[in-house]
Image (cartoon, rainbow, N blue to C red; front, side, top):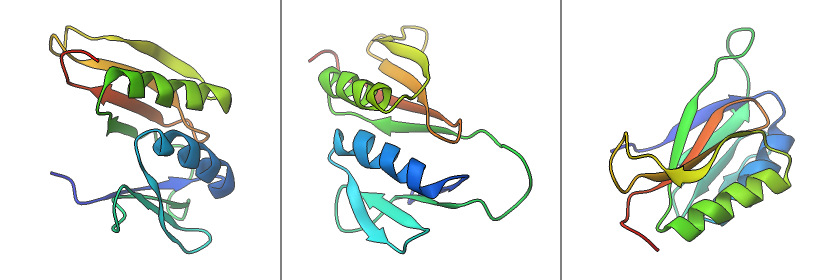
Length: 124
């Protein structure tokens, strides 16, 4: 239902390194790059953007959930994030309180945002 989402980053280069790595596990890549503003997508059109913080002062946490096609990809995304030093919020596991097949992992991006990767399929 979302067309696109954009987040403001304290350090765009650090965030770009993080998102280049973790989104590649989902088939995502940089689709547009304007230096300080970068758009990611799995096709020709970006649906996730990062850019410099331009409004407000201080940190405002955002929760971002990316869809994975299977549980293996959830684990690949999580490992890519950890390899970059991302803080672990929740390791990959089933979350039956959401629904019986909800398999997800949660990490912090370089700006401290809560980044989730989730698969809703029954199993691998």
